[in-house]
Length: 206
Ligand SMILES: CC(C)(COP(=O)(O)OP(=O)(O)OC[C@H]1O[C@@H](n2cnc3c(N)ncnc32)[C@H](O)[C@@H]1OP(=O)(O)O)[C@@H](O)C(=O)NCCC(=O)NCCS
Image (cartoon, rainbow, N blue to C red):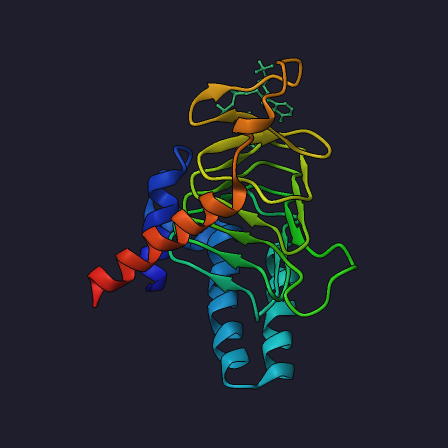
């Protein structure tokens, strides 16, 4: 995806953006993607030190820290941005939105893959922390200020510390509701369905 598409995407998603020039010249979320694309290219070509150097320049310039090893799909919108941290093994699907002060980080307990995986169209609200190699299903919203430590299914809203599912497929779920053990969302199944959908899309593209 070209830098121009990044800028157009941000312009279309932010009602406060009045022109493409404003996005290109003034939006830290756009600048962070620019630094990321260069540092990720260097990382993929095993120029690790240079990749980290560019990434740290990006952090200094934008306040957004994206490790060059992170995998980011097209259409990411980082709004405001300041304080965002995205770890080395984090994976972000298509068309996700991340607000300021969000961490996609590790718990310190895992090795290898230790950062979250977000599906497509995931929204992570301001200040939310998503920690560990958890999988967040597509179309899921993480409320501002939440701390997510477990997998979340597709099409849900999660809120709180630690985060719990408060809405699933548009239906409200209240903690006070009688817990129906049989119909608890099957996170693994939902993630497999999501992967299947993404695979079908890729096959279709070829
Ligand atoms: C979660 C969010 C995306 C709304 O998603 P939604 O699916 O429309 O969810 P609802 O608004 O119906 O809320 C569902 C429940 O979660 C609660 N909730 C919503 N946001 C919450 C939050 N940040 N923390 C705790 N609970 C929250 C609601 O009160 C509601 O509870 P109820 O069912 O007891 O009434 C939105 O509240 C949010 O946090 N957006 C982040 C936006 C942001 O960071 N903006 C910064 C701009 S500068």
